[in-house]
Length: 102
Image (cartoon, rainbow, N blue to C red; front, side, top):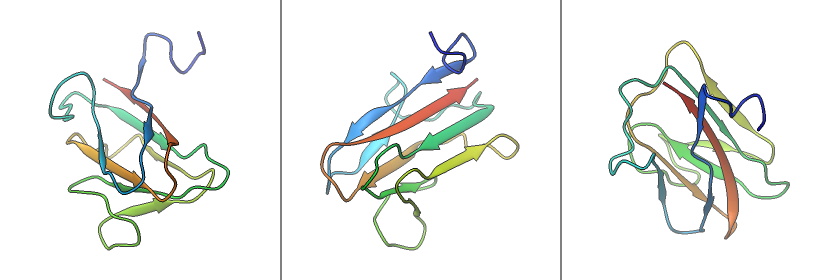
């Protein structure tokens, strides 16, 4: 077990399909976590781009979505979004790494 995935962080990582927005959720249906205190989102791909939206539906190259290029990361440790998070990729089968701490 790695240090980051010990008892503090929940691993919400998954594989994304291109042209299919995937909501990053816990096992709950809505993906919101009012107790979320820290959030890390990373794009481990060497070639794919991933768009992330913290308040709506993610779309590539669109206002409101943040694009993570290959190797890009987003860390929220002060002002942490607690609602559902959506993501989409431009390359079918791209992984997205998501860790949250409650």
